[in-house]
Amino acid sequence: MFWRMAKAVLILPGTALIYIPLLIHWFSERWPFGSIPVTVWGLVLAAILAAPAFALAIATTRLFIYDGEGTPAPWDPPRKFVVSGPYRFVRNPMLTAVILVIIAEAAALQSLPLLGWAVVFFFLNTLYFVFVEEPGLEQRFGETYLQYKASVPRWIPKLQPFQP
Image (cartoon, rainbow, N blue to C red; front, top):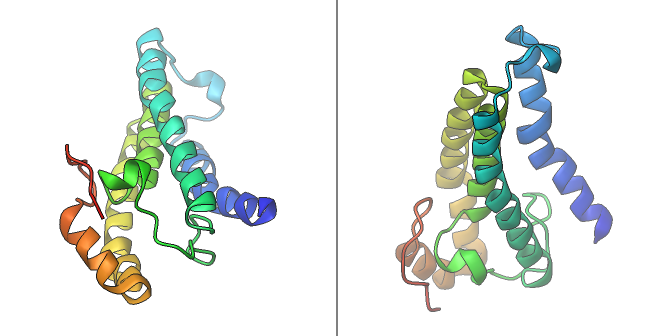
């Protein structure tokens, strides 16, 4: 399981949080990092966003491994439907965590291009969910997923947890 998860983390969050932000900085002439005007307020905002985002990412990843018997990767998805923890309130808490970390990076580095990347990432994932992931979940988990999908919002958490 370790190598399956390591591969998923290096490819998926690694691309969204490290490789693409590095390319954005390279092409936006804000390289090297020493030339970035870092402020205390930017770092504080980044910490406020990143700390709960990392906690959420760890919690949701653990649920996929232990409850779902899989990984967050589309090529190695959970074998069991996961509807515990944060998934009882919102359908995509793992991606919410990634988006918050990208926004934290933008705040820490005072980078509008990175903030733009967060917006693009959000829209690309929304399209992916609507046209690929959700239809696949409907096929794999049937009525169980359809009930969940009808009751739990995609991005904005609801106040009452879903009761399967």
